[in-house]
Amino acid sequence: MMGDGMAGELELVEQYLRQFTEDVAGREPLSGSLGDVLGAPGKRLRPRLVLACGLLGERFEEKRDRLCRIGALIEMIHSSSLIHDDIIDDSPLRRGKRTIQSKYGKDMAVYTGDYILGKVLYHLMDMGAVHSGMILGSCVQDMCAGELSQHFHRFDSQVSREEYLAAVYGKTASLFRAACTVGALEGGCGRAEQARAGELGEAIGMYFQLRDDVMDFQARDQWDGKPACQDFCRGIYTLPVICALDHPAVGTKMRRFIEESGQGETGEEVLRQRLDHLITEADGICHAKRCMERYKKKAFDLVSQMPEGRGKEELYQGMEICMSDVGGLNG
Image 1 (cartoon, rainbow, N blue to C red):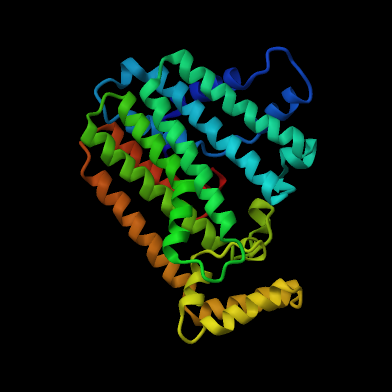
Image 2: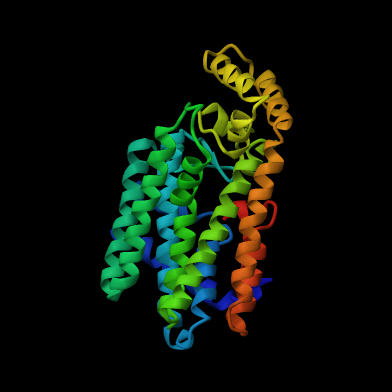
């Protein structure tokens, strides 16, 4: 597993995460909320990709410490986005534990997320990471644009596949793309290699989010504390639903069902059963899985073009973690 090959670097990432997020004044409840953010480390997928892509370059050993720092900063961007997502979704749990907004209140959660982003900006400037900072700044813009687009299309039964995929890119795949691009840049890769690494990160991120969207239609309470069909109930129509909406024999029935469910005329268990029936009739899950597999194939094709060595090996192992059935979702 990649954890063996990257153990030293990932431990350094953890050290920098603790250092970068520490409130040296010990102010409460800020210190407590920051501790909760780091309490469940997950898979650290994005730092892994930073390091693996850094290994593709000729300067990894020279830049090892810097790459670990940047990996920690990218993980902080991810953590901040999760805090803000939980506020918007009013989520009580994440990975089975109380969210910041549930434990400390929405105001405190907003400030905690913003505080972490401020720390990221400070440390990027302190490192003089101008180019990487510009990539990450652009990425944060894309993340916000993706979330805004998703919010704009809530309860929109006319949402297109293109609009859905654009939102998926922004809210999830853009940070995977940035992690791989910055890793290759800081590791000493040329522009062509950086571009290929960015494409790889985007393909992994698209697969990652599409799989999460498919799993939303399954019983997921046991592994992340979230009820099934949560996105649909919040008016977020992902690819399986969009397939049903576009289906010539199912579209009208799906729109009628959406209208009825929006009026509160459908109980939770009946809603799940009817939704499952309509999506199955439209072959929505299978279509989404085929789309996932195209991104997976693209990712493996891109890695196959990369030079032999530790970087390529770590990328293969990193993708195995990212694309596992459940493990990657805990990232």
